[in-house]
Image 1 (tube, one colour):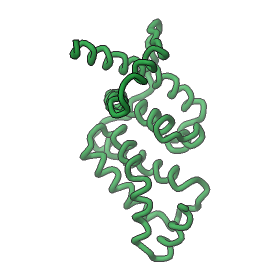
Image 2 (cartoon, rainbow, N blue to C red):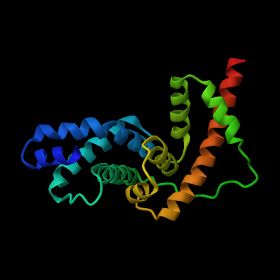
Image 3 (cartoon, one colour):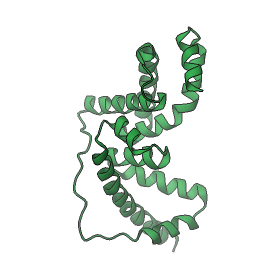
Image 4 (spheres, rainbow, N blue to C red):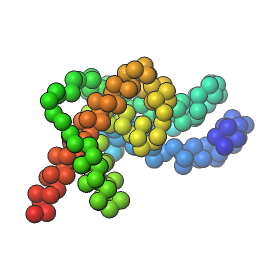
Length: 188
């Protein structure tokens, strides 16, 4: 389907580009928020990425999926915005040793929440994570991209992606556990 709309856009049908905005806009925004941590700035990042992608469409050689190519542009635009603000993409730090999270217990707690509450806690948790951790979690778990695509979008090796996913998941569960405990205290 993407290739049909690519042909239309490249053939001069500017309105056909709306298909890509509608299809990829929400996830692009989610990726941008993961990086810049500000919804207004994320909107700017997404707009810049769509404009950049539109202008670069003639050079897009379709060696990867459009979404992979486009999300890479979103990531780069987000990082460019951080550089302008002189904020660095957080380096991968070591996870604290000795801290064990009971993932099965947390998963059970999450399942007991209503779907909208689950989304709220997931987004709250992702928002509190470092940009790189949040981005990799969103790409792999929410967007369901495979390891190779995540590596391509984030310009990392497959080994680095696997390591980051492992560490990010541990951080996610630690933050989520704190949020759930905080919520329980406020209810009781």
